[in-house]
Length: 79
Image (cartoon, rainbow, N blue to C red; front, side, top):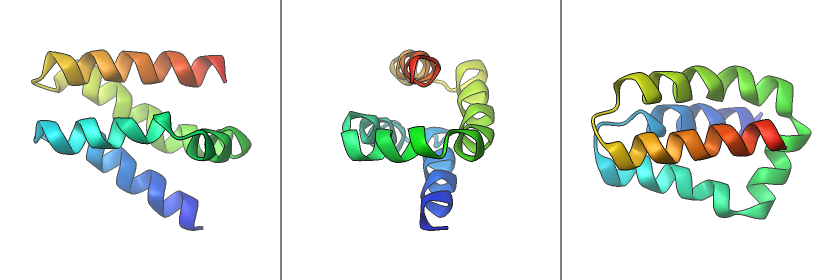
């Protein structure tokens, strides 16, 4: 349950208009524990994260955030 709440917050944060908020949310992916939790709950988590990542690629104003979004999508597909 807590993981789902965290993922919804992550989903909101990566789409945030403020650059620092979005970038900080992406840095969660540098944490092995977070990545393991996501890998173990892949089906549920991906249904929350992927729509947010897709919206980010299409509409975020900052190129660095768009690049981070692409990197995270690749990481998810590899896991």
